[in-house]
Image (cartoon, rainbow, N blue to C red; front, side, top):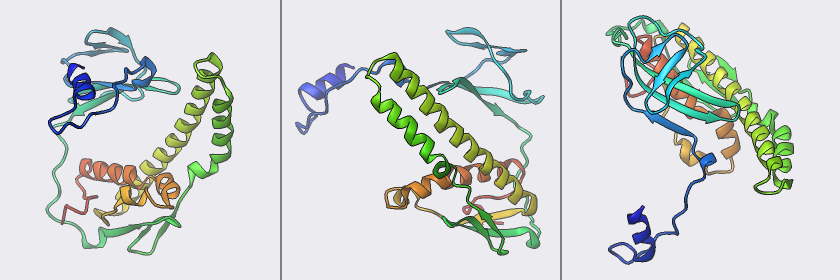
Length: 237
Protein backbone atom coordinates (compact mmCIF):
# COMPACT_ATOMS: atom_id res chain seq x y z
CA UNK A 1 0.00 0.00 0.00
CA UNK A 2 2.91 2.37 0.78
CA UNK A 3 4.27 1.91 -2.76
CA UNK A 4 0.84 2.75 -4.19
CA UNK A 5 0.64 5.99 -2.21
CA UNK A 6 4.22 6.90 -3.13
CA UNK A 7 3.39 6.53 -6.84
CA UNK A 8 0.27 8.64 -6.34
CA UNK A 9 2.08 11.44 -4.47
CA UNK A 10 5.60 11.37 -5.94
CA UNK A 11 5.27 9.48 -9.21
CA UNK A 12 7.50 6.78 -10.67
CA UNK A 13 11.09 7.13 -11.95
CA UNK A 14 9.78 9.09 -14.95
CA UNK A 15 7.70 11.42 -12.78
CA UNK A 16 4.42 9.90 -13.94
CA UNK A 17 1.84 9.69 -11.15
CA UNK A 18 -0.74 6.96 -10.84
CA UNK A 19 -4.37 7.43 -9.92
CA UNK A 20 -5.59 7.91 -6.40
CA UNK A 21 -5.60 4.62 -4.43
CA UNK A 22 -8.99 3.16 -3.62
CA UNK A 23 -9.89 0.74 -0.89
CA UNK A 24 -12.03 -2.16 -2.02
CA UNK A 25 -15.32 -2.72 -0.28
CA UNK A 26 -16.06 -6.22 0.96
CA UNK A 27 -18.66 -6.84 -1.76
CA UNK A 28 -16.07 -6.17 -4.50
CA UNK A 29 -14.13 -9.32 -3.62
CA UNK A 30 -15.38 -12.36 -5.52
CA UNK A 31 -12.82 -15.19 -5.35
CA UNK A 32 -9.91 -16.30 -3.21
CA UNK A 33 -7.82 -19.43 -3.72
CA UNK A 34 -5.92 -21.81 -1.48
CA UNK A 35 -2.90 -22.78 -3.62
CA UNK A 36 -2.22 -25.94 -1.63
CA UNK A 37 -4.58 -28.19 0.29
CA UNK A 38 -3.64 -30.79 2.89
CA UNK A 39 -4.36 -34.44 2.25
CA UNK A 40 -7.59 -35.55 3.91
CA UNK A 41 -9.03 -32.01 4.01
CA UNK A 42 -12.38 -33.32 2.74
CA UNK A 43 -14.20 -35.57 5.17
CA UNK A 44 -17.76 -36.45 4.28
CA UNK A 45 -19.70 -33.22 3.86
CA UNK A 46 -17.09 -31.08 5.63
CA UNK A 47 -13.96 -29.50 4.19
CA UNK A 48 -11.21 -28.04 6.34
CA UNK A 49 -10.17 -24.67 4.88
CA UNK A 50 -7.12 -22.88 6.36
CA UNK A 51 -8.08 -19.98 8.69
CA UNK A 52 -11.79 -20.75 8.18
CA UNK A 53 -11.96 -24.19 9.75
CA UNK A 54 -14.43 -26.90 8.83
CA UNK A 55 -17.12 -25.74 6.41
CA UNK A 56 -20.18 -27.71 5.33
CA UNK A 57 -20.32 -28.26 1.57
CA UNK A 58 -22.78 -29.77 -0.89
CA UNK A 59 -20.86 -32.01 -3.27
CA UNK A 60 -22.31 -32.09 -6.77
CA UNK A 61 -20.41 -35.30 -7.45
CA UNK A 62 -18.20 -37.58 -5.32
CA UNK A 63 -14.41 -37.28 -5.53
CA UNK A 64 -13.17 -40.32 -7.53
CA UNK A 65 -10.84 -42.71 -5.74
CA UNK A 66 -7.15 -42.05 -6.35
CA UNK A 67 -7.57 -38.32 -7.07
CA UNK A 68 -5.88 -35.79 -4.82
CA UNK A 69 -7.21 -32.31 -4.03
CA UNK A 70 -4.53 -29.78 -5.04
CA UNK A 71 -6.19 -26.36 -4.79
CA UNK A 72 -9.51 -24.92 -3.62
CA UNK A 73 -11.19 -21.67 -4.71
CA UNK A 74 -14.11 -20.01 -2.94
CA UNK A 75 -16.24 -17.80 -5.20
CA UNK A 76 -19.14 -15.54 -4.29
CA UNK A 77 -21.86 -15.68 -6.95
CA UNK A 78 -25.31 -14.14 -7.13
CA UNK A 79 -26.97 -17.10 -5.42
CA UNK A 80 -24.35 -17.94 -2.81
CA UNK A 81 -20.82 -19.26 -2.30
CA UNK A 82 -19.27 -21.91 -4.53
CA UNK A 83 -16.24 -24.10 -3.85
CA UNK A 84 -14.15 -25.21 -6.83
CA UNK A 85 -11.67 -28.03 -6.26
CA UNK A 86 -8.70 -28.72 -8.53
CA UNK A 87 -7.82 -32.42 -8.57
CA UNK A 88 -4.65 -34.26 -9.54
CA UNK A 89 -5.18 -37.42 -11.56
CA UNK A 90 -2.05 -39.37 -12.42
CA UNK A 91 -4.04 -41.81 -14.56
CA UNK A 92 -4.97 -39.28 -17.29
CA UNK A 93 -4.13 -41.03 -20.59
CA UNK A 94 -1.44 -39.73 -22.87
CA UNK A 95 -2.25 -38.54 -26.39
CA UNK A 96 -2.63 -41.56 -28.67
CA UNK A 97 0.18 -41.90 -31.23
CA UNK A 98 -2.19 -43.12 -33.94
CA UNK A 99 -5.56 -41.79 -35.00
CA UNK A 100 -8.26 -43.19 -37.19
CA UNK A 101 -8.18 -40.97 -40.30
CA UNK A 102 -11.95 -41.31 -40.54
CA UNK A 103 -12.32 -39.72 -37.09
CA UNK A 104 -10.50 -36.43 -37.75
CA UNK A 105 -12.42 -33.23 -38.33
CA UNK A 106 -12.00 -29.48 -38.39
CA UNK A 107 -14.51 -26.92 -37.15
CA UNK A 108 -15.20 -23.31 -38.15
CA UNK A 109 -16.78 -21.05 -35.56
CA UNK A 110 -19.40 -18.58 -36.72
CA UNK A 111 -22.16 -16.20 -35.66
CA UNK A 112 -24.87 -17.51 -37.97
CA UNK A 113 -24.14 -21.09 -36.92
CA UNK A 114 -22.22 -21.83 -33.73
CA UNK A 115 -19.91 -24.15 -35.64
CA UNK A 116 -19.64 -26.04 -38.91
CA UNK A 117 -17.63 -29.26 -39.17
CA UNK A 118 -15.50 -30.26 -42.13
CA UNK A 119 -18.16 -32.92 -42.80
CA UNK A 120 -20.68 -30.15 -43.42
CA UNK A 121 -22.62 -30.65 -40.19
CA UNK A 122 -23.81 -27.47 -38.45
CA UNK A 123 -24.73 -26.76 -34.85
CA UNK A 124 -27.10 -23.85 -34.28
CA UNK A 125 -26.15 -20.98 -32.00
CA UNK A 126 -28.58 -20.78 -29.06
CA UNK A 127 -28.18 -17.01 -28.35
CA UNK A 128 -28.89 -17.31 -24.64
CA UNK A 129 -28.03 -13.68 -23.91
CA UNK A 130 -30.17 -12.20 -26.66
CA UNK A 131 -33.16 -14.30 -25.59
CA UNK A 132 -32.81 -12.94 -22.06
CA UNK A 133 -31.96 -9.38 -23.08
CA UNK A 134 -35.41 -7.88 -22.39
CA UNK A 135 -35.49 -9.39 -18.92
CA UNK A 136 -31.95 -8.16 -18.23
CA UNK A 137 -32.86 -4.65 -19.37
CA UNK A 138 -35.84 -4.56 -16.99
CA UNK A 139 -33.63 -5.65 -14.08
CA UNK A 140 -30.89 -3.18 -15.05
CA UNK A 141 -33.39 -0.30 -15.05
CA UNK A 142 -34.61 -1.45 -11.65
CA UNK A 143 -31.03 -1.19 -10.33
CA UNK A 144 -30.61 2.30 -11.83
CA UNK A 145 -33.78 3.57 -10.15
CA UNK A 146 -32.78 2.41 -6.69
CA UNK A 147 -30.90 4.70 -4.32
CA UNK A 148 -27.18 3.97 -4.11
CA UNK A 149 -26.21 2.25 -0.89
CA UNK A 150 -29.79 1.29 -0.06
CA UNK A 151 -31.08 -2.20 0.64
CA UNK A 152 -33.44 -1.93 -2.33
CA UNK A 153 -30.52 -1.39 -4.69
CA UNK A 154 -28.58 -4.33 -3.22
CA UNK A 155 -31.66 -6.53 -3.68
CA UNK A 156 -32.06 -5.39 -7.30
CA UNK A 157 -28.35 -6.01 -7.98
CA UNK A 158 -28.71 -9.53 -6.60
CA UNK A 159 -31.70 -10.20 -8.89
CA UNK A 160 -29.73 -8.93 -11.88
CA UNK A 161 -26.76 -11.09 -10.91
CA UNK A 162 -28.94 -14.18 -10.66
CA UNK A 163 -30.33 -13.57 -14.15
CA UNK A 164 -26.83 -13.15 -15.60
CA UNK A 165 -25.75 -16.37 -13.87
CA UNK A 166 -28.77 -18.19 -15.31
CA UNK A 167 -27.70 -17.13 -18.82
CA UNK A 168 -24.08 -18.13 -18.16
CA UNK A 169 -25.13 -21.54 -16.82
CA UNK A 170 -27.24 -22.27 -19.91
CA UNK A 171 -24.34 -21.27 -22.17
CA UNK A 172 -21.88 -23.43 -20.23
CA UNK A 173 -24.22 -26.43 -20.38
CA UNK A 174 -24.50 -25.99 -24.16
CA UNK A 175 -20.70 -25.82 -24.48
CA UNK A 176 -20.18 -29.04 -22.51
CA UNK A 177 -22.82 -30.94 -24.45
CA UNK A 178 -21.40 -29.74 -27.78
CA UNK A 179 -17.83 -30.70 -26.80
CA UNK A 180 -19.00 -34.16 -25.66
CA UNK A 181 -20.86 -34.66 -28.93
CA UNK A 182 -17.84 -33.77 -31.06
CA UNK A 183 -15.45 -35.97 -29.08
CA UNK A 184 -17.86 -38.90 -29.29
CA UNK A 185 -17.52 -38.73 -33.09
CA UNK A 186 -13.90 -37.68 -33.62
CA UNK A 187 -10.43 -38.46 -32.25
CA UNK A 188 -9.06 -35.13 -33.46
CA UNK A 189 -10.97 -31.85 -33.61
CA UNK A 190 -8.92 -29.01 -35.11
CA UNK A 191 -10.13 -25.42 -34.93
CA UNK A 192 -8.94 -22.12 -36.29
CA UNK A 193 -7.04 -19.60 -34.20
CA UNK A 194 -9.47 -16.80 -33.37
CA UNK A 195 -8.67 -13.25 -32.31
CA UNK A 196 -11.57 -13.25 -29.88
CA UNK A 197 -10.40 -10.18 -27.94
CA UNK A 198 -10.15 -8.23 -31.18
CA UNK A 199 -13.60 -9.32 -32.35
CA UNK A 200 -15.03 -8.40 -28.94
CA UNK A 201 -14.07 -4.78 -29.62
CA UNK A 202 -16.02 -4.56 -32.88
CA UNK A 203 -19.72 -4.01 -33.57
CA UNK A 204 -20.09 -7.79 -33.39
CA UNK A 205 -19.08 -7.78 -29.71
CA UNK A 206 -22.50 -8.75 -28.34
CA UNK A 207 -22.82 -11.72 -30.68
CA UNK A 208 -19.22 -12.85 -30.06
CA UNK A 209 -19.60 -12.74 -26.29
CA UNK A 210 -23.00 -14.44 -26.48
CA UNK A 211 -21.47 -17.34 -28.44
CA UNK A 212 -18.71 -17.76 -25.83
CA UNK A 213 -16.16 -19.18 -28.27
CA UNK A 214 -13.23 -18.84 -25.88
CA UNK A 215 -14.92 -20.80 -23.09
CA UNK A 216 -16.10 -23.48 -25.50
CA UNK A 217 -12.66 -24.04 -27.03
CA UNK A 218 -11.14 -24.24 -23.55
CA UNK A 219 -13.71 -26.88 -22.54
CA UNK A 220 -13.15 -28.79 -25.80
CA UNK A 221 -9.37 -28.84 -25.27
CA UNK A 222 -9.59 -29.96 -21.64
CA UNK A 223 -12.11 -32.72 -22.31
CA UNK A 224 -10.08 -33.94 -25.30
CA UNK A 225 -6.92 -34.11 -23.17
CA UNK A 226 -8.72 -36.10 -20.48
CA UNK A 227 -10.04 -38.52 -23.10
CA UNK A 228 -6.66 -38.99 -24.78
CA UNK A 229 -7.82 -37.13 -27.87
CA UNK A 230 -6.88 -33.82 -29.49
CA UNK A 231 -8.99 -30.69 -29.42
CA UNK A 232 -6.23 -28.12 -29.86
CA UNK A 233 -4.70 -26.85 -33.13
CA UNK A 234 -1.23 -26.82 -31.58
CA UNK A 235 -1.41 -30.61 -31.18
CA UNK A 236 -0.97 -32.55 -34.38
CA UNK A 237 -1.63 -36.24 -34.94
